[in-house]
Image 1 (cartoon, rainbow, N blue to C red):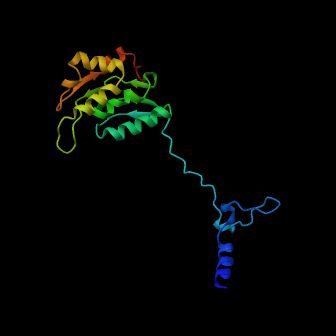
Image 2 (cartoon, rainbow, N blue to C red):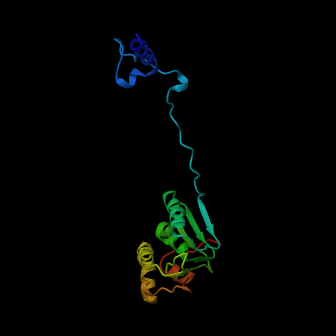
Image 3 (cartoon, one colour):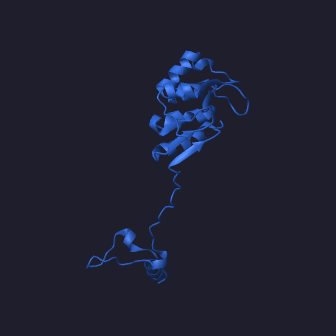
Length: 175
């Protein structure tokens, strides 16, 4: 008797739809109450970057953070105006934003150095090579002419000026 009672209770609690049990007309034999039915969850909207981003002082920092932000610019076709210095990881902007979408203002420059660990301040050769391979060919050519990526300074920078970037085809920003 206990087994029959337990079976009856379980039959009312366990949704038989999940077991593929339907009535003669095709309707499910059991539907959970509306409060327990799954609902479609709409993901929260992701903030879209503005149509144009102005970099007045592009600091270096963590490569992963720069890659993530610049990939977002790339996927949203964000235009970027470089209107000041662009140090270290900031230079990866050239790997993600199309040349025609990245303008260079007079006085702007890019400063390149080898990748270093944050903890020990030691050169990270594999990450320096990875960064080098991400830069466009004209940027890599300039680095090669300056002494190759293996010789990028750990402390200090190789500086690429506005005129160098314009000669590579990067447009001049409107005043």
